[in-house]
Image (cartoon, rainbow, N blue to C red):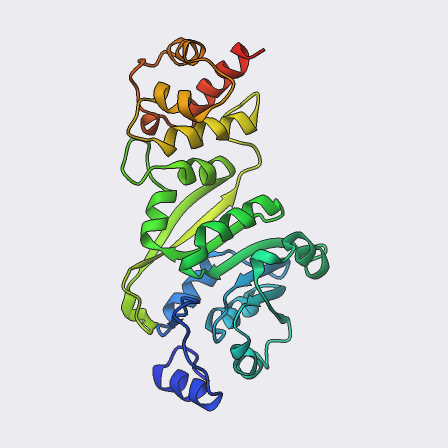
Length: 286
């Protein structure tokens, strides 16, 4: 069966009485080159254990199963059980778990299914929960890489440069823990039903060490969040209202001692700039 052929997809879904759910953001791929290229770009081998989220009818799952040692796919929609039972019948190294991955223990899944393997994530993510999923994968701390299809605007935010409109707290967060790269774009006509937006495939390679040294990582991210919560304010005013326990005078001292103008906006600082400010704030609080 060609899982990317529109007529065969429609026949498959009709046979099992499946209907698309808008609330789940379901869009199935209809261009075979896309799942093939995603699987290739993931750099899988027989020692790789792959976690996939949102397998749909399994067109990417099949490509992952051809290349990886083990694939575990997590699907929220129980209506896809009979569909996946049919489409993945020949994938002996694949297991499907049904449920909400955000309510699952990701580390437990990895420990149970990928013992002795190199864990990775490869998925066409549901666009309505992309950021929470990426955060969950990062915080699990057990993956070497994540090859993901996301909304193109999300990919641009993750890979944005400091000072641009796409740059934000999530940019800093993902770049602190990973090295992101946009691999290729995917047009809406590669899906059924067609989404209203373009997609991008990105690869997040997990860093062994952060890109800057900070005395207090929790404080570092508090500074970042405060800066972007009021991104049109100066960094000083944003931190004054967003950080508790620090006087405006001390925050001013920390900012200017880093060599920054007192009127600088936080959105113009790169990771090293935020790290410098956070370290100075940590010093003045001692």
